[in-house]
Structures are given as structure tokens and as C-alpha cells.
Image (tube, rainbow, N blue to C red; front, side, top):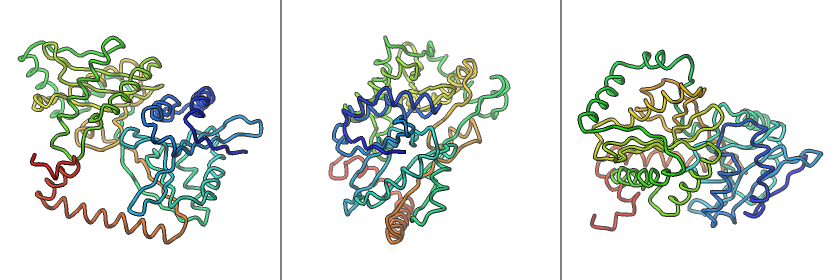
Length: 379
């Protein structure tokens, strides 16, 4: 078994056919491990290319049997290098290694550990159902390497079984009433349309999604992921590229011809990913999100999908549709025990400061402004 390092964008481009072959062979449904996703991210964020640390694992016949899509970034007050999954966790909900043989995990980790120019390795957003997760954990448990593991976030999901009527009847009376009320309210306001977009109108739908998402984010912590034109260009490229592969599903709700709700979803094999939804804040009392999910779920039952994945975040509205969820883990590997203790102290301090902020409405208000860079403005 041999490991090669890919560190340039040009090499990523040349790997297309090999990466695609492995993606198909592994039968993964993690769309963020596709060559297309990696290529587009590197294309739109060129400043990250200097940090590429993609490992290719070759068997004795020089055939690629594993890809570890990683990068090295400098973070923290000390600006120390950290090895992480390639990409941006604000955009990619799930991360992992792309491997056809779990025996590649130990060589990958040993190779990384021998590279001395890092403070820690941080493998974030690995779903608990991933075989990689178990293989990494098994290796670390039986090693002397300092490490830690914690739940990073959870993902509610629906395993689609039986027929639509059976599932719908299992939902709470209050949820079904909310949906009926939304339909009646919209019906009194005009003509309602639900539409799946295609290559002719997908850009219009995305532009509406961007604007609605930015407006809804105004009173929340942080800024919209669509705030910058570069991010918008990235998502348009993802949508159009994935559409050609039949991986994109963008749906909208219209009232009298105007888009008032949109969902940017992903689909691959038998899994439907409810990725980025938004709606017009002017219609906040209409429960548009519930109606969109209702329409999408009906579609998933009809088309034979096996799972509806709400993706990361266990918001209350998701849990009205299901009580099932899985964990996504963050595995950290340290050079020394002291490094592990230092990271524990950092996290404890962060949790303490967050608890203080959450206990004070005024601090919350200041935090919202800080997160948007507005603290030194009059607005």
C-alpha cells in the first residue's frame, strides 16, 4: 500500500476520472465526497489551494483504493496549523474519507501522525453510520496516540417505508392542522403553485432563495452564506453542475406568480437531502416551511426514495416530522497529552462564555451585531 500527496488544483482536475470511479465503487451517498463538489470548491476559493493535503492510497497494482480529502489551515490565537477535511463546514454538512477498504484507515492516520507540522488533526462531521468512523475509532482505541471524540451535531431523518398515507396519518394532529391552515390562508390570498425548477428557470429560483435567506438572517447571529457574490456564484455552479448529474432538486412555492419559498435540495441514489430552505419573511405567519416539506415528502414517497435527510441541526420544526436522528462526530488527534488538555481548556472556556452570553439579552444583542461586523456602526 502506497500513499501519494496531492497538493495542487491542477492535480485535482487530473484526478477526475479516478475520483469518480472510486466514488461509484464505494456506493457512498455522501455527495460532498464527489469529485464535482471538491473541484467546484477549489475553483471558487482559490486562496485555499495552497493548503491542499489530499492523500491518495494506492494498492500494489497502483490502483487508487482510498482518498483522504484534507487541507492544512492555520487557526487560533497562536496561528498553529490544523489538518482538517477539505472544504467549508458552513457549506458541506457531512465529511469523511472516500475509501473502498477499511484497511486503508491505519496507514492514513499513521502517515498524518508522522507529518510533524501540525498542532492537531480535526476530523469533523463524520456520520455515525460511516464505516470510516468505526475504523478510525478502533485504531485510536488500540494506539497510544492522544485523541478525543465528541458529538459535533445531529441530523434528523426519515426512513421512507410503507406508503405516504400511512406516514402522514402518523403525524401529530397539530402539524396536519398547521398544513391545512397554511393552504387555506394562501388560497384566500390568491393562486398557489408548487414547482420543481429546471435548467431554464433554476437561476431565477436561486436568486430568490439568496435574497430571502439574506433577509431572514438580518436578525440572527452571523451573516447569510449568500451574503457574498462569490458564495452565490459557487452555489449557482453547484446547482447547475449537479443538475446535469440529476443531483439537484430546487423547488419553489409561488403565490400569484411570486416566489415566496424555495428549497435547494440534493439527491443521490436513494437519499434526498433537505439542504438549504428559505422563505419570504413577509409571509412568516404562513408556515411555508411546513408546506414545502409536506410537498417534498410526498414527492419522495412517490419516487421511491429510501431516506429523507434533514441534514445537520435538530431544530424543533424538523422533529415535528420525525423522532429519529443520527450523530455526526468530531474526532481530534493530538501530538501530545498537553495539547489535548489545552484543547479541553479552550472548549470549556468557550462553553462558559457562551453561557454568560445566553443569560443576558443585552449581550445577545451585542453578539448579533458583532457577528455581522456592525458593532462599530450606528445601525
